[in-house]
Length: 294
Image: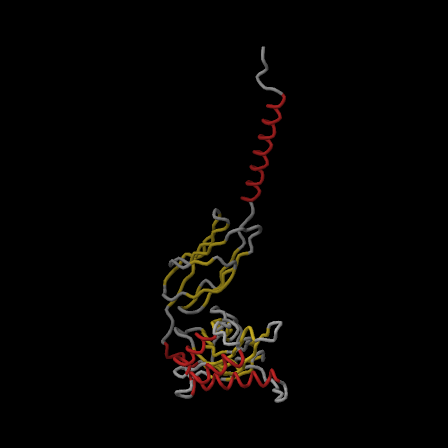
């Protein structure tokens, strides 16, 4: 009589049983891991932020649902409701386990209460300077946005912030009983740089800066300044890249035409010009710091 199971079949069958057992043990152990999450406070007013946080062990996927269609995949952060009501905030971990929180959002007081809160801060600071922001008013709940991240940056009453990039920023402060934030505009200018008039690179930087500003401020000088810069510094290459405020990049030709059209309308000021050279000492990239008002 032939054997029903050969030795090889028994080994394969035993291995499969072992893998199934290990998988069951892993699933059972992972299902026993409790969700560790919190929301604070659970009673807020419209516009005041709640803080949500998850510290569940061994998570690979996070989803917060705020009960109004908004969601977040961040493990922790801040969120503000725009309408009063009772919201069921749900956290889903690894697409299977969930935990719910009930948040009661009350109607805020009149926006006129904004007059009770003010921002005390300078309107112009230097790049990389430590800036102190002070909240003037009565409240136990503060929420600052410094205009760089698009999120709540601090909940201290008098925080300190450092701007690393030149630009004009809108600082927003929310406090308890406020429906709309208090807004403060702050201009960040480049750090002071000593210019050596005998240094050829320093002279070139100042010359390029002056010519770009003339494109903005003066009429009927665009072609003269554009051709001058193109010929003298850029080897007649209109595609040399220009990095603006460390974030946006454009080719030289498009950048100059943008200055001509929009620069004057936005009161643009060229604050600093720098450049990179290639091995043949030709300028291969311009870096411009500039600020624009309304």
